[in-house]
Amino acid sequence: MLPASVWQALACGGAFTRLVLDLRGKVIETSHSSRTLKAHERRALYAHTAGRCQGARATRFAGQPGTVLHPHPTDPWNRCGTTSLTDTAVICDCCHIHVHHGHHLRLKDGRLLGPDGWIEA
Image (cartoon, rainbow, N blue to C red; front, side):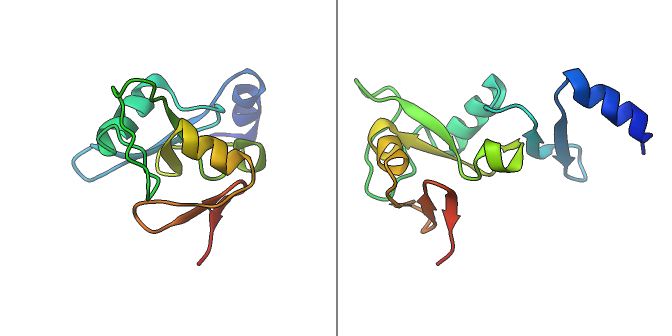
């Protein structure tokens, strides 16, 4: 535990990163106070999704001409103040625009994503 004064000093000009490790020391979850994913987190997320859009009807994948994948936070940073690897969906341009124009997007795993984050079924 750190004293409150140390937390305040760190919060003033820094960013926090939280790591959750399994019993063998392998990172199984990260979150931080930066607005976007860091480069290594993007690589991990793209590896996890095999470089494919997570939209249920999407067929786009990284490397396909004209395809750009976006790591989209499922809990907006301006609301929660953190960015989490597990709360970020990888979606293509088409799906990204769809969500940002106020529509809901069904993901391949069945979850529903809206402009303000996860939608409970």
